[in-house]
Amino acid sequence: MIESMPPAEVADSERFVRLGLDADATTVAYTREEFAQWLKRFFDLDAVRSSDLVLAINEALANAAEFAYLLTEHPGTIDVQAEYHSGERTLTVDIADQGRWRTPPADPAPHNRGRGIPLMETLSDEAAIDTSSAGTRVRLAWHGVTRS
Image 1 (cartoon, rainbow, N blue to C red):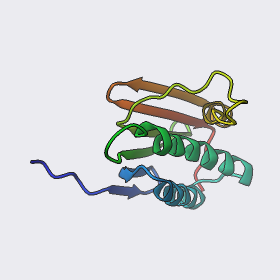
Image 2: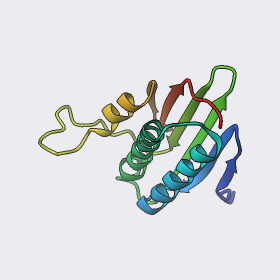
Image 3: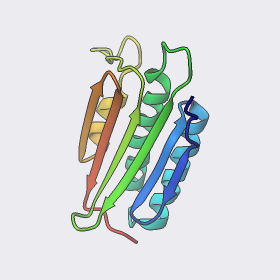
Image 4: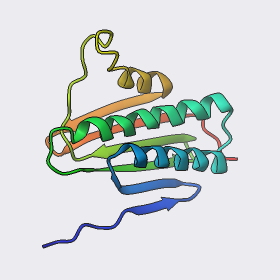
């Protein structure tokens, strides 16, 4: 039997990587804070833009933790990979799970739910969601990001 790999962590001026995170609320909160600290350390962002990035990432992480493994027997994992492209001054962030995609409600009002995806789209310069039987990947991008 193949043993699972321990979680991997990288954080430098080019990348923020967390692989194999437990898909739960505690891990999401911890990762959100680590990501916020990484942004603060390496990038020149005003408070509003920094909050936008952190909130968008939090939405993607929370959605993966809450919905991707909802009907599975075992808890799953989430991968986060952020990369800074200095030539384009673009920051891209991928949040991936190996769970099952659940279609959001068409009208979120009756459930008071389903606002995460529109929020991610509004808070980022680019947002894409790729779904397959192998899981879901959310890619968010921000342009005009400069290093501190």
